[in-house]
Image (cartoon, rainbow, N blue to C red; front, side, top):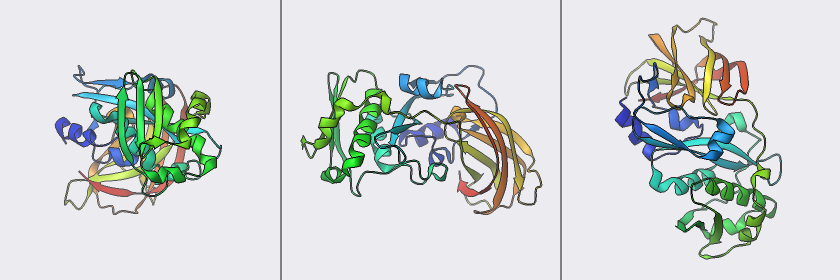
Length: 294
């Protein structure tokens, strides 16, 4: 996949660490001699996840989305995302926040999705330093015990962007009960980050091809891969060279031979990583392989 294709892929999606975003991204076998692109990371991103590796082309934006915690009322957990679309940064961030992370098995039971079905962002506008978010009427049905977490998530997600000094929350253009909670929103609501986690493993193949050519092990933040070994269910090591993905969110094994794997094939993963702020983690786990096409 070319860099231009990569940029088009990222232009319409945000990235967490999220497994779905990296499906189809090209791996980089070695750092470019001279990076021609750049990543503009918010101060919040650097605080929680450290410096961001450069991209080969274009300008990318690294930011944080704060998701409500299922374990501690009112608290939120930060996750890293990226986009190439500066014009819609705030709306992309809010859209992903509302979509939630319920599909991430690595965080099951730790995150809550408080937005009622049908909730939408009607408009995001900024005048001077004030950002006003206008939600659809469904947001008025958020449970009372979850309201502060929602407000914390919205305010912290938007406040990280340059020039934002105040966040106003409206519903259908009118004042909402949520607006009264904005004054309580600050970084004391952010829970400490645990060490990095493995999100999942994806086998990549060309469109229409029968065999897998590479296997990508995705993590929940940018990491340095210290060790990554992939083995078949019978314990046989999968031969290939291991590289880091774009943004260092995954370890990529380029298989020496095509692999006749199907979705659901069990793959054993041995990994050891360190994130950009020195938090280390390791594991030996069996994972059901997902299959995606370039």
